[in-house]
Image (cartoon, rainbow, N blue to C red):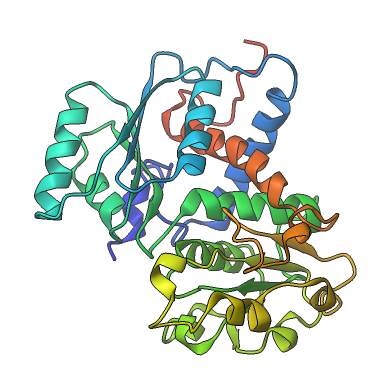
Length: 330
């Protein structure tokens, strides 16, 4: 994968957001702080800020995701940007030529930022390498590689509920459960957690769903859910990607739930004040018992709300004229 330094300009400011890997602790905390400011500034009846007036953001989705695209659209509109949504079927021909043609066509429409989602790992990096000066690329998920805004909103969620007022996660135990092999969210969360000082990161999954060598990322691997959940503060459940699962990886969804699904009985393994997270969409009766999504310990709906503020913060950081200002009251 290409160097994450592509994300920063010569002054160390965010130019593109492609991956959590390589982002400094200071930059991550700055983005989380700014997201908190923007959430507060848009909490009243007037939810629009003038930070990106006159800017154009193009949501360029080669892979379907109504939920993610919608939150990016809402975020951009709350910053007063003009938004164009494009759903493009990924071509079976040469990916390089197809992506480059698409990029240059959209640039000719004077777009300022592309929010890119693509099934191929590295697609967002390709866009960033070939983008014209002043055109920003924001990765909304590329293959198994990265989903940095999901990683940031997960860090925001954990910080808000488990480490308020703290600058690091050094005292927390976090378990990531499920389809780690195919998950770009897991990789982004691991990078974010490590950068913010978490030293007890656990990956819990059946052997076929654990990437070879993932221990090198600083995690401990468990193949038994009960052991892995013992005493954790945060459990992040991953969506079981059914379209990639059955046959080669798992015998059945019901067997996965029996062995790795979060149930009320298994909640007893967590710390009493532990929280439950999930990037969505949820497969009810697979990753967790259906009603646990709305349990008092669940932050799943909070994550959706926080995602808008976090994506606003990233867009404002990259495209805004004055870093750190919310524009509230302007």
